[in-house]
Image (cartoon, rainbow, N blue to C red; front, side, top):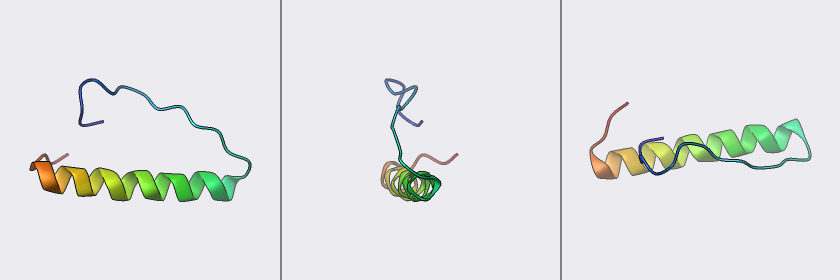
Length: 41
């Protein structure tokens, strides 16, 4: 994660489709945050 205070996230899912959707959301939001902060991975 790009924030030093965040080193892990724990979430629960009922299906693999929910996991895939969550990964897409995390990726989208991480890209948005990185673009706003100027941080590049």
